Image (cartoon, rainbow over all chains, first blue to last red; front, side, top):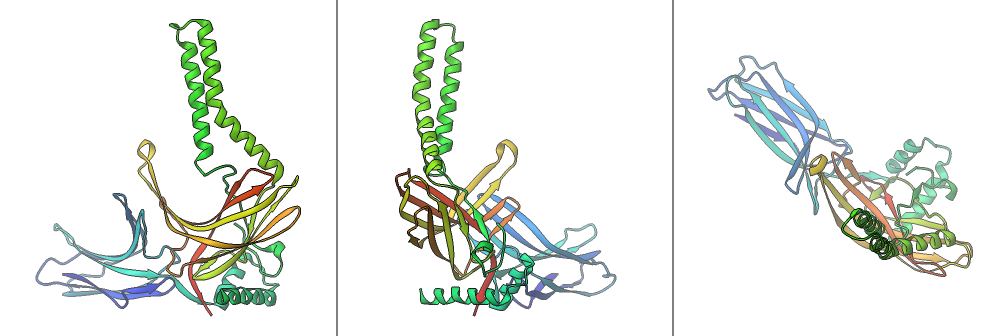
Length: 154
Length: 215
């Protein structure tokens, strides 16, 4: 029997999703390998497409009654979990025990991806990284703060 | 969309106008389709041997006159707009933008020949698109997932329109996305009511990253 244990069910982009995939023998066949993948799925209007973020496999599984595959994946700056009008986007971890001459054991577990929370400094430095222009730091900070002040007053 | 610094307006990220110049987005396509349909009808009529040559010519002229009117009127409007107002640009304070923040952008457009702006209706929209299938069976589904008015302040100027547009992108997102036939686009759409010139529209894509900025 295979199961997925996640340390978080909700995570922000840029953070690391941690957990493990555990397979117990339970008297059944020994798997050839355990395959773990993290992907996001867009579905809507009878259409479904999966985009794999990472796939890993543990092939060192010989004669073990329990196999534990640790999971540590940084969630990229991709889509957020979303429930729109035409499609929705969900994230999940999938695990598969590849059994010889038998139907593979599979398990899936969904998790929610939220936007990252950054400080002003982080945001500004990311913009500077984009434009490669570090000459106007002082002015940048001032203008950004002005914008925030406008926001709070409105 | 380019990115830039904050200090000088000349280096603010500038977004190009996606129009449409005249009417709603579907208008130019519709009048073009009517015009092409008229040309096809003329072709069918001219090849029809059951109709006499004089009747064929007269029929062709009538069809051309009827089917070309919307297209011709639209083209006249486009030329009038192009003569009176120049190309629009939207300057953003920075790019890409973050979620959950109030942003202020500057809409600028040259004015000529006494044209003046009377009113602007600005809206922020989030547009979802899903492309399903391939080739002849391909279908595109589009929906507006978010639609809110954006406040704007017009600064009166003689030879240029200068409008400050303030809009807020919700904290819950979504962020901009374009992958595997799925797109999420944030659009700032402006409907301009003009004096001395036909009314026109502008639309700009603003890129939004999956980040909420907290002070």
